[in-house]
Length: 350
Image (cartoon, rainbow, N blue to C red):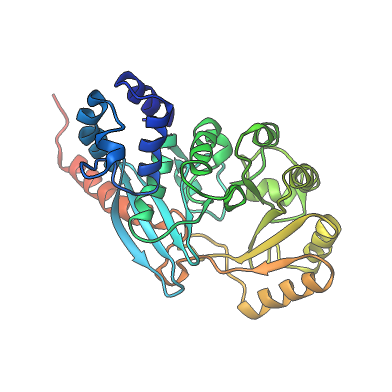
């Protein structure tokens, strides 16, 4: 289901725009959609809509269901969320009322240091499934900020992501600068985001100032050089009045040298920007290593002293081995093993 399809369904039941907005607002804010004690429901809604609402409410509640929760010591909680077709995505409750949502099941970019990219793209997450992740999270704790930094590349699911963002920034009661669209960089993003009624903040995955290294780390990202990415980001930042957040996964011995520090200063000094530096969240079976916290702190301090606003962050869920894609991978592994064993036991026909 998409948000557009939900609106069409409500209209077919006699809803006018005011009715639609009430239903959508109640849903995305995790408030009761059916309430015989509230006048807005008993007197305001037409009879055909009132009669259909219990079934619609049940359907909306089933779009995304909590499969498991993995609290972290930092106040975060990794959520494994099951969608209606049995596929699973990950959401992360962040400290200070934030939520990280997924926009795809899997991902086609294939970042070499990311667990999600290892399985490729399985399918797109619909606009309603994105909003349902927020509604589900709000049954657990307040959500005042939503970042599109979970599984998937939002630019590869642009129509659904932008439809969800528009609803979250209106009926969802989330400030536009508290909706953060994270992308490896795609020309379509810079074309379409400025045209929306809701203009989200933008986070760009930089990871290195070296064009060839970035192509190796992000093998299927659009061929934008770091310089081009920063140039486009600066234009969007000035249009919206929000600084660009540049994401930098710190990989020991790969993008943490003096040459990268010089490159960052060259690219970002004087820009309307914030550099989020995140030491790598170790994933078994991958060769990348997490640098020491002392080394990461020293890099961030040096950049700050040289005029680049830098925040050193830790990946939420580090203590529960919850890097993006790991919960889904652990949940899927037993299923795949069972299927494999069953196939080995099944004799061939004929």
